Image 1 (cartoon, rainbow, N blue to C red):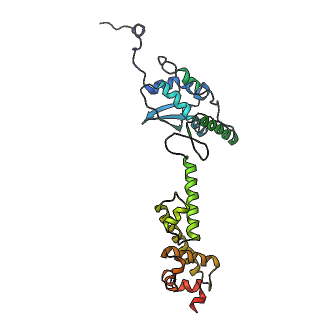
Image 2: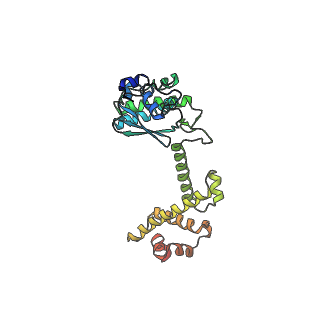
Image 3: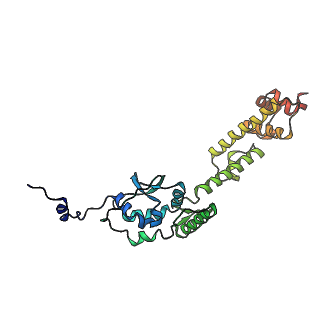
Length: 278
């Protein structure tokens, strides 16, 4: 059998029909339509690993800019990546891949083209512009989100959560501070009495606050003892009283000099209340 010229063999060849393109190739072919031609010149899809689409960008500025638009990019990617599960994006600074994409891959649907109409052709020129773009993005998300944070109005994924992570952390911090203030001012309060003041506080949080204050107050008292002074300050006496009440878990009317001496030691007692040692 004689060999045929390559050109003759290719004339009768056509791509197989009905076979879905490899997802990464489909994304790469549709990338300019997904993100816009100007943006596509500065970034490109690299690989899909564990539900994450890795995108290479020319600089960290481009990575940050594209992070603001991750949801829109994901929408376009999912429209063309049939058979692939892309749940998140990851950005890596590098050299985007170049070259023509497979011509057999169809263009993305109209909805995938629309999602990047608000993209920009270059990174923000300064911090003020970047913040303004972020504010516009957040306002758009708030208009379309079904659930928002009750504290700041940030969009949430849904479910029973009423606060975003920053607002929840701030609320926990405020409650912890208020609990410590109560324990300092009234160390004799029982857990039930503390929960009457702070209904959301738990028994574990009360124990943690007690341990924190005891450690902190003991450091204050140790510094006073090592200072070599003959008398303590008013603040140090208040700290000592709070320490004794927290450590003993007794009300003020049941505290005796013997209990104070047993918890603080004779040296600290003489420093804090010199009139008792005379």
